[in-house]
Image 1: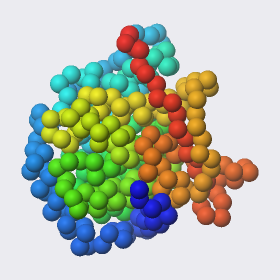
Image 2 (image 1 turned 180 degrees about the vertical axis):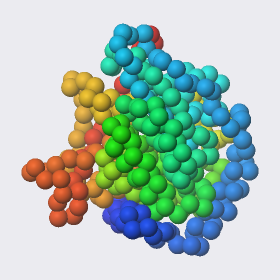
Image 3 (image 1 turned 120 degrees about the vertical axis):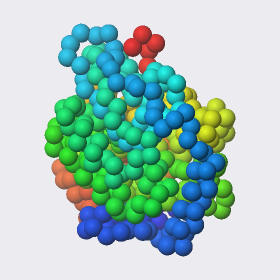
Length: 327
């Protein structure tokens, strides 16, 4: 396990650098960064281009319910579009739309604007398109390509924070699935798999700080949403060994769905929630980066949003929701 205080310090450095416009390379240093990029290039040769570069078209209205539809937009990278899937029903956007329709008992209008290969810099154009849809909620899966390409962490975090802020200013709720732990990806070999893991979790923690500060909430993808990916890689990963299989995408969507519903005030009060209590945002972000499925959102302690160590945040673990077959 990565030492949480170390991750918290890295998250603070990256988030601070993002706010002031610095690079924020983190403690890994230029040598490790260069090695990581070299390893990523080798891994991409092994991974190749699975099933083209686009997921199946999934835009549409889901849920046979009366009333005006809830407007959901999916932004981000290949995981947001379901790269590798051969049917829209297997993509995370459709799984989310069906689950949201079931809980809200309203139809859900889904527009998928993510792009394979996108890093946080590309969110600018995606948000431009999303705002034209006037969404009720935006879900963003981003971060993996920021690690495997030559993007400075602070720059990536800065673009993500700006994207979340724009969406929130327009009245949309925002849920971000943070950078997954790329140390679970088999084409990335040791010893740089450990470096990649450390980098991924530092970025995830910094993303959480920035997103919560901008008014959104995050869900940690951590070790790509559970030990099954390490134990059953042939089941949870797709044919390229990098992108999730249909079960992997489903697991990702189910992890995010409770937070999506909660953001819209739809999560049932009867559903169990495990609270880790309130923490300073940097510590909460670091702790969440270690445990997949953990939600982090802003909170108040004694009526105050800020404490002696910065903004207060709370960590939650919501019970996953299964989508009915007829949703």
